[in-house]
Image 1 (spheres, one colour):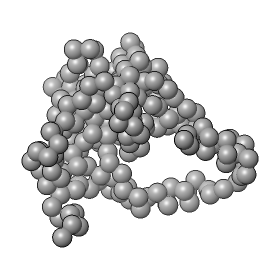
Image 2 (cartoon, rainbow, N blue to C red):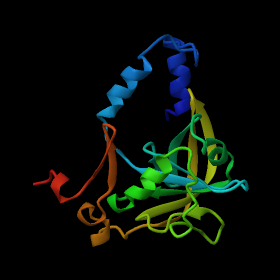
Image 3 (cartoon, rainbow, N blue to C red):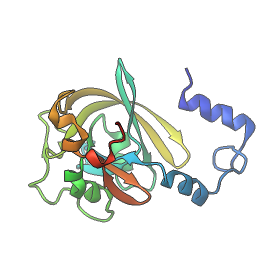
Length: 197
């Protein structure tokens, strides 16, 4: 099985960059431009390592295994929430719909107290901060992490989830309107985006 560590070590043998031992590749702006046209689902990660709750909006969440249930996401060193999220034992990943755009923007705005409005967040019985309005949330334990450039890839073992039942009306994109980020703009999926005939 190819892992991120294997990919990094394989690439390091062929193309080295000053930061990671790779030769010069795409410039940051070129790399960002390439991914700007690749839409991604929007999530907010919350955690509290004992120093207070933090939240961060991410578009890098994806599942990697169903058994065991594992997901990953990346945390930029530039994020004020990075240190707490990486240090936390457990955290909550919120998968957002268009109705939670305000939470996505909250987690993406720097220099503010993302938990000032106590009416929009709470704590699970296990202690993690979370946003109850999220259409889906997954509580998990951090089981591994991997340095990748100026970011850390975090591996999470899913322990508990609150999600619409598979096949239910609530799980249909027309009803749930999943939130998507594309070319620096928020979008949503729905009947208008269905390409099936």
